[in-house]
Image (cartoon, rainbow, N blue to C red):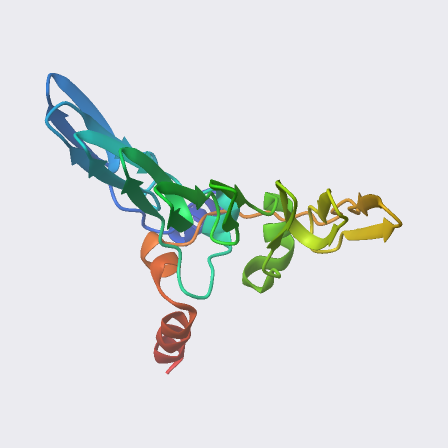
Length: 215
């Protein structure tokens, strides 16, 4: 009896994820979430947290990384796809400039244009697990034609270097640059992901919903 009850409790704690759907088009079938079709393709995201978009007759899909799902930003987890001049990019904080487009792969990433190129950089999943929505915003620094993104960036006349984690540090001695990142000692275990509708909401709405439920 105890085993049966325990199994029931575990199932009850599992969030009700929406059922996957299947689409048949152009002689092929695709199953998943946010499915889209074009004149030649049919594609679906692999998780209910993903998104798909159609540009120039092609379907593009993106699924957020697990760390982003478990630790959504204050504005909500909303991946997107953008297109410019036939190039498509999907992700977060997408930057369209000078005929080019690029997106970060997490909502905590950053993109910047330098010398006609668009560079995107993302914190590690370990850093996102450690800091969650409070993770410091990374920056990008340039020196000459070089560009680097991360934390505590330092530049010389021709070089630039950035730490890869919020706790990392960089130093500059004369013309020498060096960075150090301490290892993450955090062990972050998640049993189940939060419901898709919840992670899409802004933090303010999540708090209102929690207050309403408590009342």
